[in-house]
Structures are given as C-alpha cells and as structure tokens.
Image 1 (tube, rainbow, N blue to C red):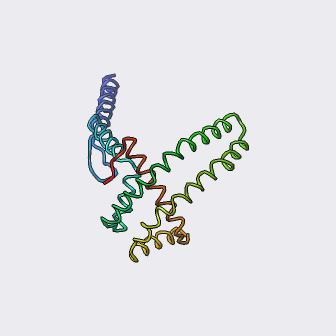
Image 2: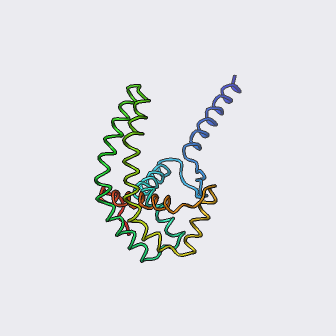
Image 3: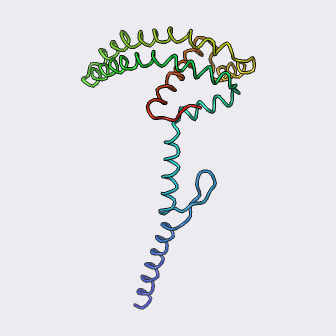
Length: 193
C-alpha cells in the first residue's frame, strides 16, 4: 500500500516537473539563437513580426535587387523621376482596374466563372496592355543606362529560370515596380530612398 502511494506521488511529481520544464524550458530558434518559450519568446516573435510589417516585402526585394545589380546614384535618381512620371498613369488606371476586377469577382462568386473570365479577357487585359505600351517609352532611358555588367547579371538571372532575355518584358517589370513604388509611398508605405 505504501509503495502504491509512494509510486503515485512520484508519478505526479514527475508529471508536474515535466510540465513545468516544458513551459519554462529554452528552445532553439531557426537561426541558432536560444530564447524562452514562455512570454519572453512570444514577445520576441511579436517584435520580429512587427519589424517585418514595418518594411513591406516589395521594398526589401527592391533593395536586394538594387544591391545585387550595383545600381548607381544616377540610375536611382532616374528611376525616381520615372516613378513620378508613371504616377498619373497608375492613378488613372488603378480605379478602372479595381472596378473591372470587382465585377469579375462578383460574377465568379455568383457561379458564372465563364462570365468572369470573359470580363477579364475583354476588359482587364486590354487595359493592362495599353498601360504597358504607355509605360515602356518612359522606362527605356533607364534600361539604356544599364552597364554591360548589370545587363549580364540580368541575363544570367533570366537564363537561370529557363527564360530568354526580352528588353520589353524587362521594361514592363521595371514600370510595374516603379508604379507600385509611387503607390506604396503615397499610401503610407516605406518611403523610397
């Protein structure tokens, strides 16, 4: 009888100590740091997520791309002026595109997927294509300033993904990023440098 009581008290003690150790123990983070699994660990995770939210993903990517390409100050200034030139075009097209997308979304939700596809094909795609054709001439001066080394890096990046280099596609991508840059700056996102 005494052994059963002693065994049950020992089991409860072991269970309590294991639960305490699990809640208070240290854990290894993915980057090798050791931090508390309790409130302190939660607070650290919250701080990291707030830092990520303070710097939008696109801004981090843009900075990374610019760093890898070795963008000069002159190219940066030219990109900023192109973004300002693209601003009126983007501001004019954005409400139209949102309205078309909302109609397509409403059609899809009501079960008319073919109608939604038709709205996108007949209205949104031509709107995007006209925007591309208007933006390309604005971006061409920036593409012309690329050095041979920068152009080689871009071509290698494209080739690594199994694609061929197309200057028009590059102009479209740059124009899209610069148009988004202006929108993010005005809407309270991180300011450009």
